[in-house]
Image 1: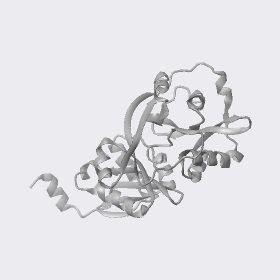
Image 2: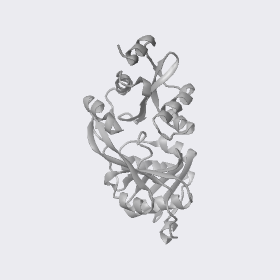
Image 3: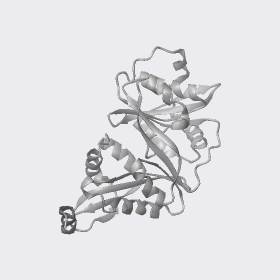
Image 4: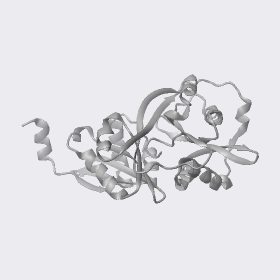
Length: 288
């Protein structure tokens, strides 16, 4: 009998429990073990917006899984982590199945690493695209008159931004936008008195993350991102973009290198955008 099997037999059986803020510090330890650069504040932001499950063994957190609901019809899934020492026993599947049970008949979205594709495929998830992670310390940009198109969003404009976002992504994310406005900065592009695009920027991981970014076209998306970069000189920046966005080559010129690719997947019916704008960057790979 292997040493690994002996250890598993000596330990008590892991138990599922609701993930709470009291477990955030241990959750940070799990993500750090995997090399994820989350801060405690990043975990708290995600936990405050969603619901999840924790897997505990002998009083120690060994796994997490979270779900974020948008309206009645949609949820995104993510932050599915199992401690290195506890991998290989089906605990990830157990956590994931608990999320599926909570979600019921909702349409579910997630972004999968290569390692998770088989599990999610067995649970009925189908690939619908790719998300590219770009990051780095951007080079100094030249002043551009186009940056004059962008300004800070006013509090009174949050309902307008909410409507634009909902039409663009096909599901309501009002609470997420409120939390983003509190955690960082929302900027907007206004054309003929109408908000036609917006971007969020906040502290995250090793520096800042820019996203979501919603814009009428790729040029406006670049201007929104450039404005955020200009306000954060010599700062590590992360941007997660749909592969179909067309932003990748431009981000590379700004020294934001593509470092990872994940597969966007859905179980059920994908959201149906109804507006003219497009989503050019995600809030995060978990929150969408």
